[in-house]
Length: 340
Ligand SMILES: Cc1cc2nc3c(=O)[nH]c(=O)nc-3n(C[C@H](O)[C@H](O)[C@H](O)COP(=O)(O)OP(=O)(O)OC[C@H]3O[C@@H](n4cnc5c(N)ncnc54)[C@H](O)[C@@H]3O)c2cc1C
Image (cartoon, rainbow, N blue to C red; front, side, top):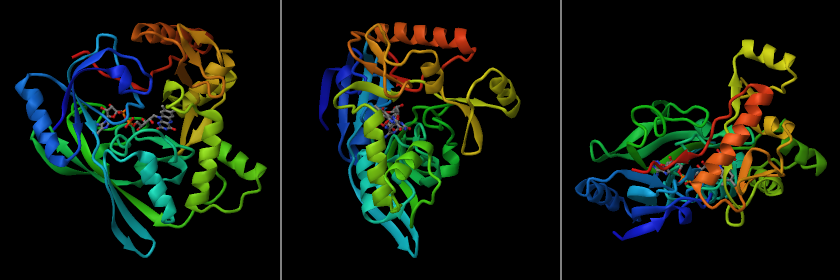
């Protein structure tokens, strides 16, 4: 087990902010997990688990604790019976490699989530989703190391309480308790049927696409995303910076009267926070070195912010502008590593 000391969190996260983590341990095999938690306990330090840091922001003060980086790799077909497939991957697998594996085999169920940065192990944490699919629709179960009981056990999908950007792994009393070792998804041999999510459908129509196999949907999604979303290797960001806003049926009436555009997704009403930001004329504007992406208003790009403090100032200004104009209070989507 390799232990590194005083590592800048800015180098472990795609937003590229944050001071030093006292210790960082790469988890390369399952035995490392127990050993790493024991190391932290011995030093009386908290543990924080990271994948690729694509949804996580570090503080300027750093983290006086132990960051575990999930580097467990491997993909296995557990079952293939008729059209039903159970596909398992280790938590440190790159999510998009896992999607690619599934698509190449002709398995449908996660293809619209192609090119989401990060690891497979992080997918259930915030129940990732894109272009009309979400992890909750595919996840079957996960193996997780329970840091309270110091053992690995299986957590079934229903027990994960997966909601929009929420699960037992990041919310409630068990938040931070588990290290997700592997994730199993249930997929189907087959293909998605139109109509698709708006921007995918637009691409299909514009290019007269008729092949909706997982492999081709993946190719189209990658094209659509590349036109809109920053490549984390090139531009520092944490993806969508604000959550969308879900409305009750009563709230929809009021919103519509106020000229707010309300979407329906997975049977729910939502206001797209990116739309609010765009309507407020903030696209392309730079606040304290943080730029509101001129392609996708929900994304904040760290152009030249020097610190978490810059990000916090930018966030506060954007939230205030939106609240003053629309009376909705935006909530941040990426999580933050506590200082201790
Ligand atoms: C350009 C860009 C585009 C994006 N687009 C999308 C999108 O379309 N849809 C979407 O849903 N998200 C999107 N995101 C957000 C991000 O890709 C996802 O949240 C992804 O799941 C993060 O994976 P990660 O490995 O980087 O997680 P990290 O940022 O490392 O961790 C995220 C959270 O999960 C926890 N965690 C990570 N691994 C484990 C584990 N093994 N066990 C327990 N807890 C763990 C961490 O403690 C943290 O709380 C985007 C991000 C970027 C930068």
